[in-house]
Length: 444
Image (tube, rainbow, N blue to C red; front, top):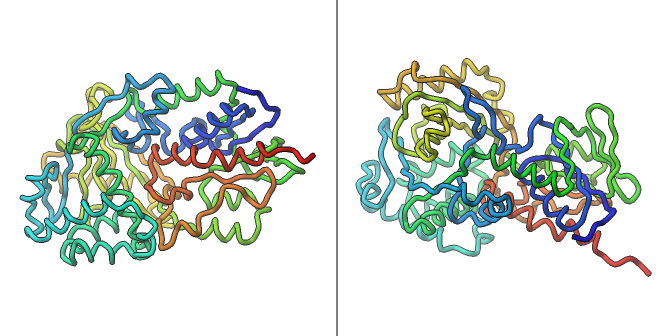
């Protein structure tokens, strides 16, 4: 590694910021990561629940997640990956069905045979599409209706779209559903037509701890509790102002914050840059983590189409992860995807607990509240950008109009869904644009 005097500041210590720091350091740059939270990881960070430390939000590693597996190899954690064959449930019309194989799919009562065949054909068709940009021009409901039929859209697709996108489904393109299907189909293909998901022993807490150690040993400075108030141009470089008034000078700064937050942090951007950043439509999440004595069912994920259920899905992590990781107990996530201004963000934890547990009682007759060991709620207003029509044409570019200031955030994921693998891939894709100015030959 050839050492450079150039000093980079990376604003944001999530997986994206850490991945960028690693690659910049490997390219010989001095790097300082600034993270507002007390711990690194962002959406992948862990927390404590009833004496158990595990991911704050649900994550899964597919066999096809090549960027994640490459990172694990680089961190010396490949041998800690565990692959598991999982099952999928479907809750509709007040009943829970298994949808884990082809036979169960054919037996699925809510749809007739013709609609099932059309649904299967839709998924197969999406898995074969390579020109995803063509799908950006088609509203997602129009595309699904063309391939699946109105009955299947009304019974299956529309409830699922609403649960993930809310009213934003009306402006989403078909590229949104294509990205989800393509990733899940790749998981089944890699798993020999079985649904094979995986995790690392110790969860992302272990991955992030090793990641931080490797970065520190390589010379990267990691600063947590460093809330950034502003990123300002300063000559040929940039200055970062922290909430406590500290001012840090860098040769170059890359901001990984969500688009509207980046707009606030960098006031000197052009009017068109601010418009583009604030024009990105986000979905947020309110996600409850529930530690239970006993399992709810055998499914890793249960999709929900009944509108009265106050959460998007049931993610039973202990159907994937060995229960020894949770002290012999069961961990369940109850996510609710909403717009950033949804009133649920202001709802008290006790109120959410009552509504969510009451729903579990209706869905699972054997569930008892005495089984609940702990219940915690995470709230994030900007989780992923909605793939609107012609979305890729409006994505903010990596270089800004300000010398030495760059943007790399999840809004730049144009042909996938937000997950750790896509995040790592984004870091790789952004690297040439970050390094190009620094590598340009000096004027003679």
